[in-house]
Length: 246
Image (cartoon, rainbow, N blue to C red):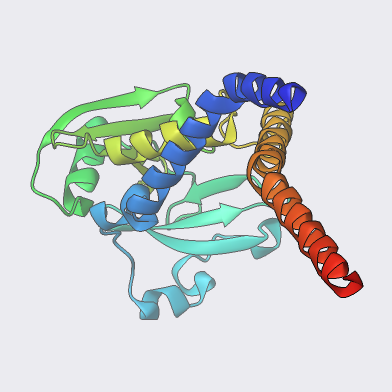
């Protein structure tokens, strides 16, 4: 038993803190609704009517070569109808009604778009054109406008300078959740790999810790009672045999 107690003690020292972090992360992720984390309630996207979306592309753009594009979609860029054109190699382009690539939006237009689509009551604290995307929106491509609102959770819109669309929403709620998600999956860089070697190793050590604990329960509680019952059963059997012989 001493061997198993030592094993259990050392495994507990190795994995105990991480188990606490796993539990803490689970509590945070279960208490905060995922819709609140994603922050889609903070933005009211402006879409065109179904009539415009269904309108044939060539009726409004006779200069467009449809064979050049894999997909075409209407977008509302601050009240202006533009086309999101996706080429066959996956590249996205934004065209005006003449089939010409649109110019990037100025910062005042971006602020106007962000303020119009923001559903809460707060002004804009800062707006920056980023040439490198931060880690919280690593799925986006630069350049992108970062619009930070002056509210309690630092709501942040990431707006495309070409399409004028709010491409992603972040807030301190998202950042708080993402921090515990990082601790939970033990991916301290990309924060996306749920099968990284560190997590697998920690899970195996936790399994050994739990297994050794269960075996100690058996050694300290179950086995002594079982031996005691077996001893009493033998004593009772011996006593009955002696009575029958006499």
